[in-house]
Image 1 (cartoon, one colour):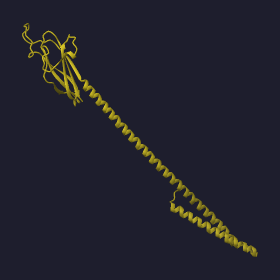
Image 2 (cartoon, rainbow, N blue to C red):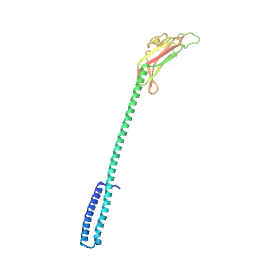
Image 3 (spheres, one colour):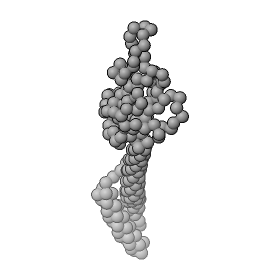
Image 4 (cartoon, rainbow, N blue to C red):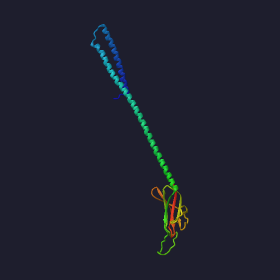
Length: 242
């Protein structure tokens, strides 16, 4: 059972007053008893009742005062405990808030690092370029069976070489290469220009784009070979900015 500070203070004051009053009554009763003994008068029950009542009053006052004092000390301990609990709760809240901020900062930094790494990888891949190659067989013009017909650029089969790049990529350069399939020539020595005659073979003058899956697109270049004897290798390399 908890009491407020005014109640405890009033109990202490009341107990103190009762103790002082009882002490005064005891002193008066003892002096009266001593005087009666000096005069040789008998001590009556009424006379003896005064000290008894005073002692009884002292006991009650002591009990009330002790109880009030214990309640006062208990309230002080509870106040200290409440203050300590509030302080600990505040510290825990501060620690939790700090931990949350650190976690958010770490998550943000990790996301930034991953994003930068992704951009770096994308930039590196764009600088290296995306490539595709294809084998185009000898030209076989359609016509009368058994009749020898010349294969021309107009009658030859046209194909498209395509590479897949990110949909947001900006094409910086398209490099084109072609050589005979049985040639040992390196790709560096086989580079040609768009629209250039590469010996009965040619790439179209312009590249074109077409959509692919979500987040990607294709960059394509047309190619035609009208050589009747040999197959050709065609290659496209697209460099882009992510």
